[in-house]
Length: 377
Picture 1: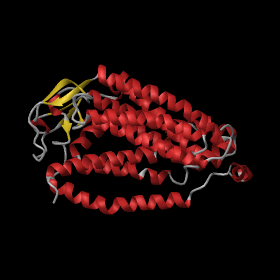
Picture 2: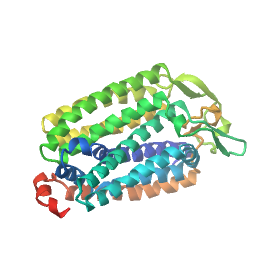
Picture 3: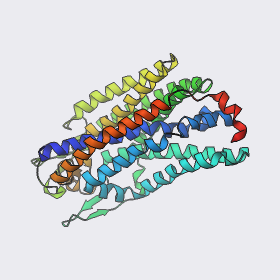
Picture 4: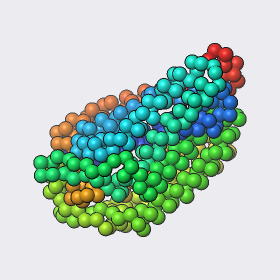
């Protein structure tokens, strides 16, 4: 049986893997939705764009469900703090995500261009809003959330949606938006034919440049102006979960003082290379490799943030000692061990099924076929 400390590290990594899986698999769905009016210049092109994700988006969201389930079962204190504190932000994301299947279902029910134009705008919102909010949430992790744990481990949150929209989180939100728009363009280049694919190649270069600038600016802010958190009391990796048994000081540097800060910088450097290379590959018509490199950039971006934050899961801006960390916010050793067995059984099945689905649905969406069958929609 794996010891408690190792189980906590394993589940911290698994949480990162699940969130990265969602960012990669559902990220290009969100990017396509956000760009449906930009990449598609007429109704047939927009119909073709939507068909690149319409048959797989539900399966892609399994990663979001797995991530939320992992937080609930493996990190119950994190689940309680995040879902309570970010409640209005999550509701906004939920409403935006609901628009996507509704848009897919209702857009083609009426042939009136005004009807379809409204749904195209709603689909744009359904892709752009969650992408931005996810980045804002990550940015707020570095600043800390306004919550306090009392002596009975009851959580008190003192904040709202507006309080999350601070300059640094908004910058990180723009990083997220530019990254997933680039990722969406990479997928459009893989699954679409010209002129959509050619348009996606050009836009991918623009979004890559925006991401490089914004990601670099966020890194500079993190190194210069954002105060970090550090545990000042002895760390006991196998102790029972109780965030109030530690001491935390504010004022360190997230990158230079974090235990994994150096690795976060290394990963960030690799991400910059991936983001620079991906559009070059796309322009050379190596679309699948470009999409793979774009996926690595998405994973690397998420892991660079996670490594910089380690061992913190959700710092507290009101009471640093209430901050949730890998060492004091997990479930019991038995629960983590039992869940690990379940993950080892079911995750390969999810990956195998997903691989099979994408293999069956490989190939480009024919724009001519969409035009020929346009009257059917």
